Length: 253
Image 1: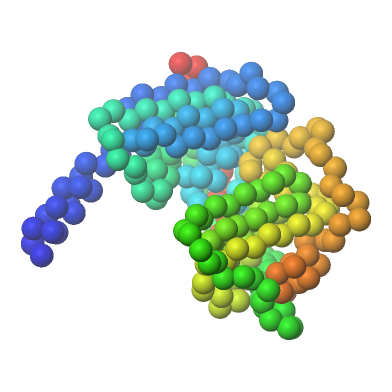
Image 2: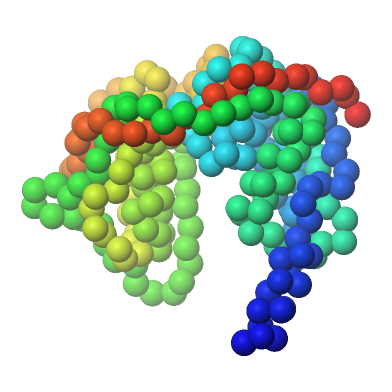
């Protein structure tokens, strides 16, 4: 047990506290495309991302949970390369988030604080008649796919993946009260309403030419009940907010 504990400490000490080399410059991308790639060994490659998106990643919140700061934090796009030297294995996500926080603090010098506010939330519950989620069978091939406007599918995944997508679409905290614990295969298809989903939900500028959904499709609320046997109940509850009190644009390098 002592040897195992010592090994665990040694492994934790090997994790880098920050990126060794960081390059940030304004992005020339104007077509709404973006990319975030966590590379082997903990390195990070970003194309056309905003400070707001980085704050969301670093602090584990959604776009509607970030407030304050100058307007450019959600509109100015940056290309970024951040490398870690001498690390081969994949780093845990919580550690990567901490490294992004360190990068933000070093290059953008943000001043932030957290608040908890009473706000509208949704509770996800099983609808009358029961859940229509199908437990996964067969080979373990987990996958998640957002097929564009109004289509989301999961293979061998839990309800948490659906909750995450609903929060992104509806700009509101969703609390899982279904008590559904298995891995499922499911697809949800709906006609998004104005203001649902889109690049804004990712912390990016609005798209000028967003694809139009099928006009005769169901709302996301109707689709949930008809296709998955679930429904959303409006409630109020505590929501954590990350407030940006100040931030600076970095020098190019």
